[in-house]
Length: 286
Image (cartoon, rainbow, N blue to C red; front, side, top):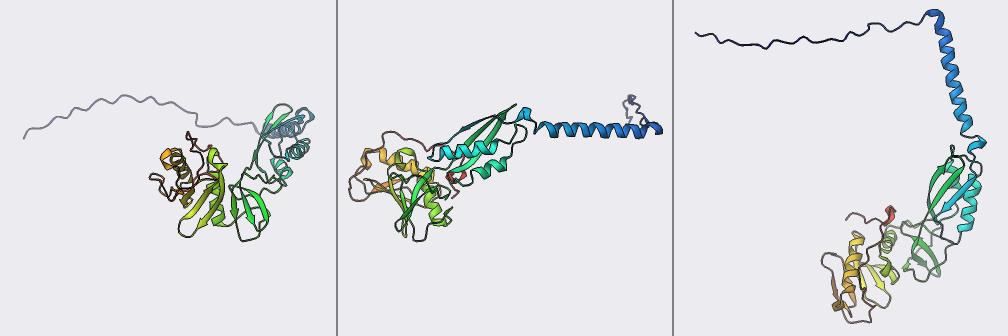
């Protein structure tokens, strides 16, 4: 038998860093004074910051408020300025600011930032009505998320959504009505002004009636933005003039048909819906 020789590589020496096996020991007679000094320093730091955040040096003196467009703008501005008077730029009480505008349904949220040492900026995010919800002779403007905006002017240009129940004080909660509001909120500006009524039918689902124009058959609320874009393209097509309805239940294959009616002027160019961070206006998943 022949032996097989195996050559092994010589292993290099590993350099090992020697670490101290023991930490420095504080002499027993110094331990107590050291602990007292550390505790005193922490107390001084804490007292400094607690005093500084409410000190007159950083008292809010100038409040800048933006985003207000409603008729209650002056009242909202006064409420926010009053709430901010006893705050500092290092101690902003967001709960007090929210409470100050809780009585104004038009306010959806506040964005607050500070300018050291004495400035505060508040941007008011407003609800915008997308429809008039009507019950009998009562009508109230409502936002896309169902918020009832009492006190706002009842714009005649808003579409009408009729219900059979008493109007709520703060928020619409019925699923079917909320879906109609979502459709209204997703409408592009050129067509939003031309909506007369939004309703739900047994056979066709959600149907949007345009002023002096055809009906838009949406079916369900899913992909409302895509359906509005499809409707806009069809209405911009001169061949669709005279149609009594536009079916956008399948937005990839919209269809215009029906008997001729007096129609609105065709939309010359497509205008996409305004993008928004409001989750109430987002298209729900099919």
